[in-house]
Image 1: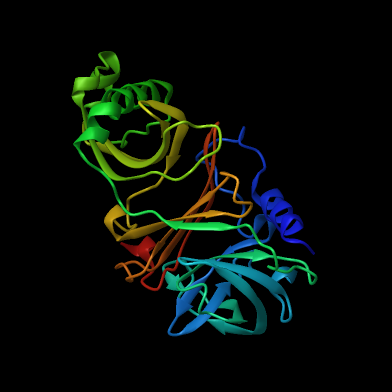
Image 2: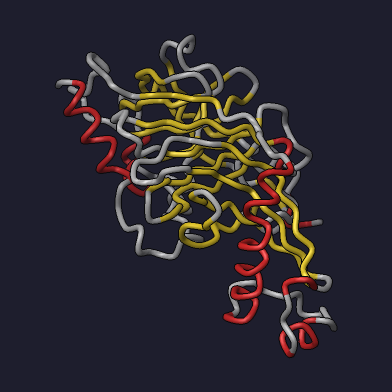
Length: 299
């Protein structure tokens, strides 16, 4: 299988359906995509596909392209083992089947995403591009996008996308007179991945507070204009943005990247994995997952 064919397969896995809501996550394991965690030195994928955890994609012998913070390489499922730490139910740790991965780790570094690939899949001739995306927030970013972000928050509050807390007594007053100056904005993260069709692409993680309610979003911009809608990143019992590291993975090397975010140091509630498709039409969430060793639902 040529490098060009490999790129086509990988792109087909994730290209789909930007018309779907930007905040709507794909079903766990959809298109053969799974989060990968390093658990006490073992690389594994928790099987959360059903109550019985019986996904055929995670059976021993299955092959995956593991995408990490530095690159990617081919792995296989060595065996399955029951373990805890992946999820909770009824405020108690859930015993899940986990696929234990084996393969060369050097090129991958920190594992983030597992992509199910055919037996004949090869990385020979691959054109994939990887780029770390350090935070580049500065006053210029606020100056160019502050007004657009405030206007977006007003619009989303009016159409219901910005969900106020049920006990937020100031919500009605804001909706009766929605003005941008009543919104507290912050930009936690900004970076410049290459996105085909955009002249000056910028990825942002922003926070908007209206009255006593708060919403965190990943957004895509082109220059001083926002592109598409908010990819919601719930902040309750989740890692602060400063704990997330970001990397761009472009399987075909043509400016159609997947933005991946991961935690390297374990947050209080457990490691996280995020995946967003970046296209000229906007950003779309395809992966949001977290380990749950402390059963956060009980807090």
